[in-house]
Image (cartoon, rainbow, N blue to C red; front, side):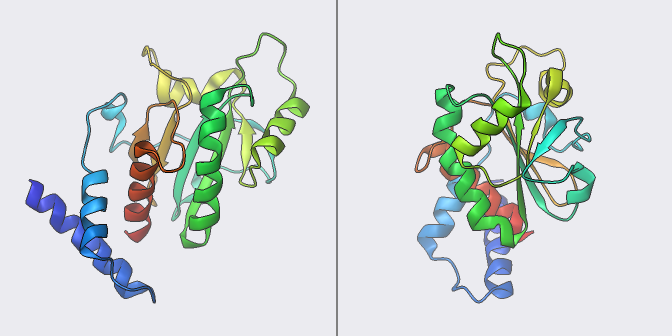
Length: 203
């Protein structure tokens, strides 16, 4: 099984090398990708390989309204976040900005979904200030009443975090889930997410 996984990584990396002008990855890079994409049991594994449902969200910022179906053919990274007072969301923000900047032209769409946890009533104008503070230039929408979060993630489950991330392939299939918390630049979780992105973008 391990040999087959390594063969898959090698094949995908060879395809990337053939389809771009970049040099073939070094043996060290191959080992890193293989290690960081190795399956690790975690929350949400039961959703892997299933089709992502269409989201039900409101008030798109920095973008006209989007449907998940509109992004078919692209790799989609969806991350739920809260206000800038959330330390986990703030720690992850630089990674999301970097992924958007580095991989957008290669076929990645980063989507931010705000889910309201404050005691005060939801104010879209206030959410827009959070988006500006985070420096998000990718599309962001409000997941009112957590409609999509409940459908995609909670669905009767008791989850550790609500700040979950879904990585969806070009055919609309859920291929990787970061079950919440943070993936700050240079951290293990960020490197693993980056490796998954590189592999899916090369398919």
